Length: 357
Image (cartoon, one colour):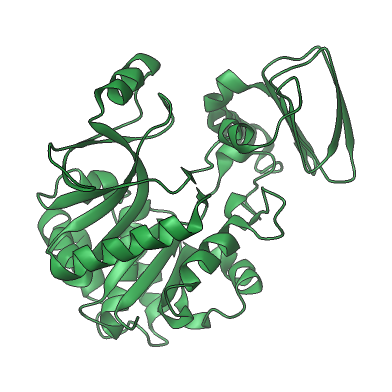
């Protein structure tokens, strides 16, 4: 287990889950499913079964440091890597890889978001072990692909090469498609959902950064002597805002020649939207969902209501709506229009100067 490391990315704002997810406590720190554990805690506990605590790193915005330590008290304090500003996933991963390289230059690493739901945990851990076995023996970048169960427009897709077996070379990555294209992808049998979970060795990912994002690689390489010392945070605070705002998918995975995908089935959802939470939740006879609160529905169907635990919602005459209340804000939005929530939050920020964020 010594050469196995895990990086959990936990810096997102979760604005698509507004008003439940706020700047002070975004969705990765919330117990969405009523299990008694936040999404971050569930992710950490899952990996903790196969990776020692000292080899698990959390990368997040500096404002969430205390929240992380409160939720994960057994995590070594030095394993919380703090971003001074949000710069997407490529700088986040570059930072973590350089930090881990200081401990183990040949480490094998799994990188995962903090807010995904895994329903079949044993199958997931078996898949991660298969991934570790592959990247430890090959100069390759590996992503986990999920066999699609529906023509989903909210996920990115991976086109796989022809062949037998679960491990395939990646042909192309495709951004979120429209409904018609998603159906074509699904019917073809050539496409998988992109889970956003990656595995690689430190030498393989380091070479990819040096080739495809050389400017970023050089910035982080300058800190080789300070990683793991009291000077690390000052160095990161200085260079991080200068990094290009780019995702690991666009910056490296879509361009690298040595990208593979492991076809997987472990009950995955990225739990990225109210609609995805609705899909995963138990429903009444009219397909209504009430989460965390009490609700009474009259002439209503296909709704999701999420409110404070001590509140009762009485809903009449609604079909296909999100009704979400938290603190000082209430959202009423058509499920089919929820892609606009992020823009709504931006508008609210501008108009009310962050009061409702």
